[in-house]
Length: 113
Length: 113
Image (cartoon, rainbow over all chains, first blue to last red; front, side, top):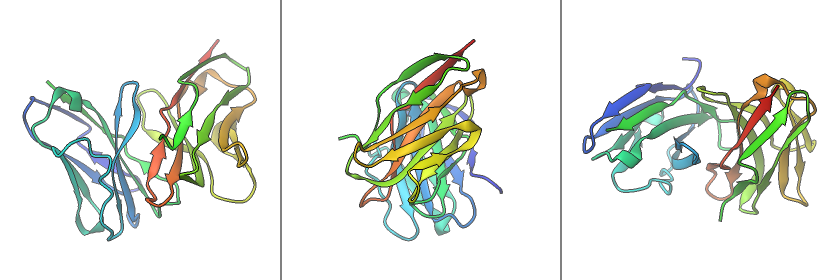
């Protein structure tokens, strides 16, 4: 596709359930980012993939959060045993290289009830 | 320490007035700097970027920003705003060493008639 695609666009889940959020970056983009946007909190960095390098996981808030990127393309963010404080919009972005502009997807709005 | 600081969380202005949204970066951030805009209920899109060269950078929708190395600033300006400029604006930079893209907490610009 022409842009970064995220699915689902909305997800409502019960507390304690696991969720998977998907990101399809722009073809050829080697850098991929996940951010979390909560009301009044700006963009919180979660994880960064660059090519075949080990991902920078320094922003993951707890061990319930994990992410992988298969074949240098599609990425999945998994949240285990969801909590209400996990409710937020999860944004994915990709770029040709770290110093280049990042393009964002529309995000997945996660609501934990 | 935060790498990118946006000094104002909210900026209200009247239509056709000039506006400046402030952004300062720390020494841990390389001189790759960006401004993104998020219109209500939409994703983030790139307004402008500074990678090198001229310190005055022009972006879309009449916005411009000036890179000031001595003041470690990258303030965003527009000489005359429109109602349609109402949005949240995010300053971002590449964190040196890690190469990850880090954001300020955002500034909500509200343009009133």
